[in-house]
Image (cartoon, rainbow, N blue to C red):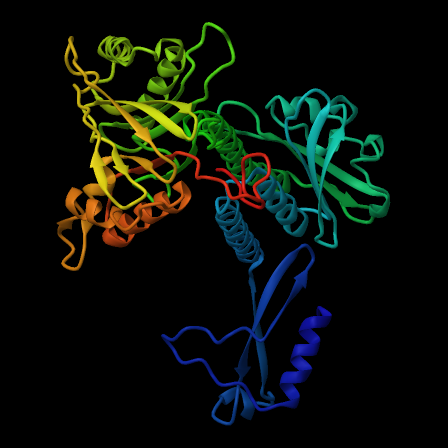
Length: 513
């Protein structure tokens, strides 16, 4: 009798008699389990005889009958089911963690940490790089992740060069861990017993390779373990590939966006100047409103005036911003012709009419030149709200300029107004996002031109920085958290008279913006 069955029989004999199974009911639960040869059995105990049993009266004593059922296959299936559930749970958790970030380094960190925790003693991910320089993430038994940029040759590791190109993995039994270089078989890992190299498939191109390292004293990777590693690598590769694509798109977007953003330097030699810009969306950086500055050049053939441009493209968002970039580039090329505003507007109009976009633009051109303490402005509006002149004493005037929309008609007209700014006077250029801001106490009233004029009467003599801040604040408070259009404001002012203690034409400690 097998030892495990003998022990179960003695334990049963020392305790209460087992209950008798009733006909038609399920067998009793097994009392013991154990091997017999290469098979595994479950043992069920059934009482043999009793006071009512006729065999007892003929000299038989009551005992126990043991029924043994072969459960070898059941146990194998149960183990496979448990392993499959554990594998499914691991892959689901891995997918959740990998898809939680679009940062490439974070994806590599999650990959090596999960692989070192569930698949091997240590894991390493190598991503495509430039030349021989590759981003490498490593995680050891301690769970600490190390990110490095290493000069490595994938051909040094068996199967790595192929995996980096997306080819199927080399079976672990064909890889000698002793041949791995020091940047893979790190010293603190000790002797390696097995190593697996598998590709990280990406979207169209490989995302890199995953290496699993198992220390000495353990067996090689089984085919089932290598299959799990490939399933995990497929998820990690997809996440890393998405993160890389996102990073590339973000870089391209940032590069293009820098060309669309308003100029950072708000300074002209002839006048004090300040500007504010607020896109329609809280998460947006650009929109349909724009402004640009073109300081006067020292070249003999260049116009002696500086040029300020404020415009409003029909619509908002990225599509309007793209047209904004086109208009800004066109105007930059037309700067040598800004002595004639009408000619500049005609050329810009022709450019937009021959383009693919059906959007139009309104804008204001402001050429300025210094005349002693005063600043002479030439203002031309093309379908745009006329600039406002805020005198130092608080009077508010509207510049006498108007003109046609740009990008609609073949022939356009415009009138140019000339304005002199005395010290303390300012010229305000703004887009309709200011006056058409809807809000107020009832939430459905436009800010309007009249309200803006009234507010500006109390802004006489304000520096440009304070003036644009005041206008921007009024519109923002009026609209609150409601949807609004793009807003752009520029203030141009004649330099204020300096005090006797001024140095170099400026008061000490005062900065011109």
